[in-house]
Length: 203
Image 1 (cartoon, rainbow, N blue to C red):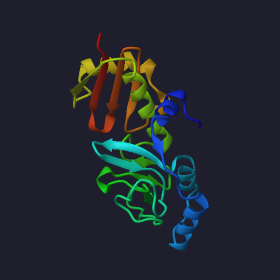
Image 2: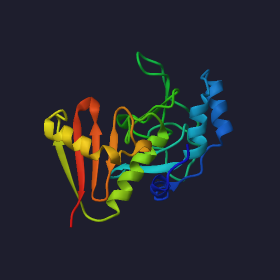
Image 3: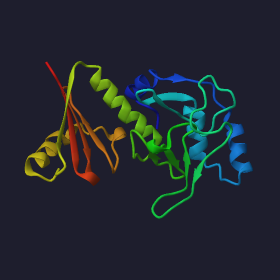
């Protein structure tokens, strides 16, 4: 599935460094005795080298591995190496992002699931779509954010979810997080932790 214009617009705000060719990353995986899952290689090919600001003075550099002597200094991981998390319980084998602090949990599963900022999501593309929705909404003007509740089964919040159901953004919504976008309201609903966050345009 291709990216929406919203996601492409957000992606265009990020800078990108030169990245290792995908064929070289595949060889690193094979030489290390790892399976070069196609979803991993596609991620590196399409998004390797993008630099995402994840906090003040803190960045994540996408991809599976970085080359030696990159323009942006190596931060947390060594050059030309991959870092694999073995499969565990309900989670498939996963690969860590090319360079991001481990506390951010940037992992891409062999089943395509992404964990990290913007996730958990069924795919990395879904993460991008979520950023695209937020970027689009905030570009419309001043926004007020409200944490509504940790009990989304309260009657008034059930009514809110029903009211906004037609505005569900399917490409940005999965099991763990759903986004509903209207002209002046954006609702984020996280079913597992029963949390709702509302953003509203401020006149």
